[in-house]
Length: 103
Image 1 (spheres, rainbow, N blue to C red):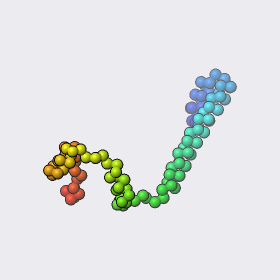
Image 2: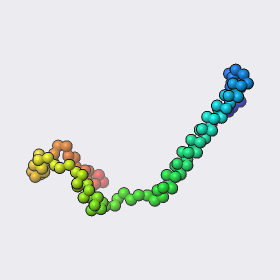
Image 3: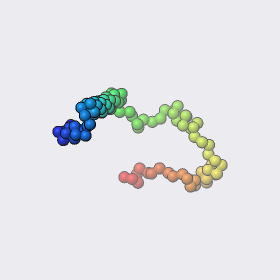
C-alpha cells in the first residue's frame, strides 16, 4: 500500500480497534489473491505436464471409427436418395471447398 492509502485508511477508521480490523481484512484479501495466483499458475503448469507431446490430428481414421460414424448417421430420406440418383445435390448440402481452387 502506498503512503497515501495508509493515511486515508487511518483517517477513515473510527478508532484503533476498527483500524486493526481493517488492516486484518486487507491482509486477508491480499493473501487470498496470492493463493489464487499460485493456484492458477500451478494448474497451468500441470496442464502443460499432462500433454508433453502434440496430439496428431492428421492421422486417417481407423476402420472401427469409420464404422461407428456410419452407424451414427441418420438415414437419407427418399427425396435425398432420388436427388442423388439424378446427380443433383439437395439444397441443404454444400460441398467442401476444392483445395486446388484455393491455391
